[in-house]
Image (cartoon, rainbow, N blue to C red):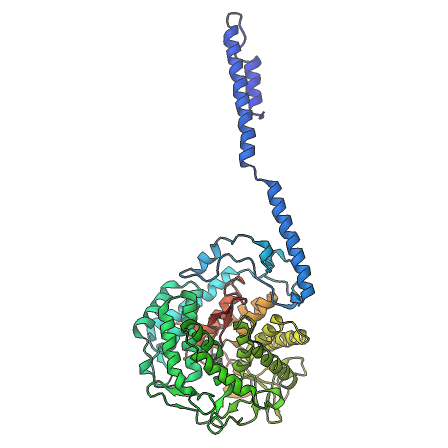
Length: 594
Ligand code: DMJ
């Protein structure tokens, strides 16, 4: 009985309805009503409790079962050695990328039903203990405010391009007009549109994505293309279109990816199958850059086709693209490797190496990246790629990784037997690559590889914070008392490059060490302060001098890579999960294949 009913009852019993002799029946009737009301109220409370109070017994059982299951999985995992592998993500809200989904709808999506016995993922929010290498921050959840800031930057870059150079390859953000680099030949192929599509999709900028999609459907015409870089056309056009297809399942992207893929095929018509670096889309004639060691093809160019060509075969059902890149690999496998590594130049007619220059920077970089990622893309089945990657990573650590007197880890170049203590900004991607290699396959070298990867990330960060703008230079040296500092004018520029942020992103996902998010946020603020202009974002002429001026180019990879990686750092781990997607070297995500 409730406390409110008690006074009422007392009032009836001995209060205002005083019993009179002439009214015993009415009094009895009144009391009877009170008893009935009280009884009904009692029933109502009991019934209500039965219906509405949560079933604690059931909930306790589920939690307990899940906790025990997690415990078993962790114990089994430790035995099997997967404690060294990347922290798995949360039970998925839904597939992170859905057709037409915005980042907001993705965030609000309903969690998938728990199916504990089948899953090996450990929910990050439940796992409070430090990660294997000591990372403790963030737990892989989104940082909404910072994520939104990067999204706003993307919108500014895109809107400026739309306003001032729509359909051109790139934008001149200061002079507010079109720009094109020689890598695109004499063409207007909308490189910025194609490079930006997947970033727009991932950020949920769907009106912008639709505008880009319609331009591709109505205007993109590879017949007009003059002589282009095979590598650039592959990583930006084939990669960008395939990624847009993977995310949206819109067939127009597949059709266009096939068109450009077919335009690249004549470049492989060489005696060895090692493709030329340049191809005329009009005539199909291939050739190499005039400056490339007596007509050689370049390692990072012919070695960075694999992911896109394999996926193109997968979606078109035509094996020709895969056959071409398999041939490249078989040629490389059969060659002698100085110091276990691959020189930057290879002649496509003779199959002989050109100059003996080994580097993790320009012209070498993404070849090594694609060995690891070919294995990841294959669902870890392409053992040959992994073996080649592991052997290369070993040789890189043995011959190219150095430590400065100040304790900074860096990649040097090796020219014949001469060591050049210079590291390109481009090589900053290598921190993420070594870490990803270490965390995806536990072997004797994993701990060392992880340490080198983190050391490289730290060095690249140092190269940023040792400048006046807190933005890193194009290359930096470790000589004559300098450490992570550019010493020559052409090394002091910043071209809106992504590699340092790429490494922060990979390391954030693998360790959840808050410092990677902090470093990324520091860079966001520096980009806003020094690179943002009314008409978009511009590179800098000298990162050591805040007043030295802008280079007036908004690189298409700024939208494809730089902003995507910065955005993803602040997203939940489930957005483009590293378990399900592999990023091409232009940051275009392609699905891991079964
Ligand atoms: C991008 O086009 C790719 O990342 C490529 O592999 C190297 N250079 C640029 C960005 O710096």
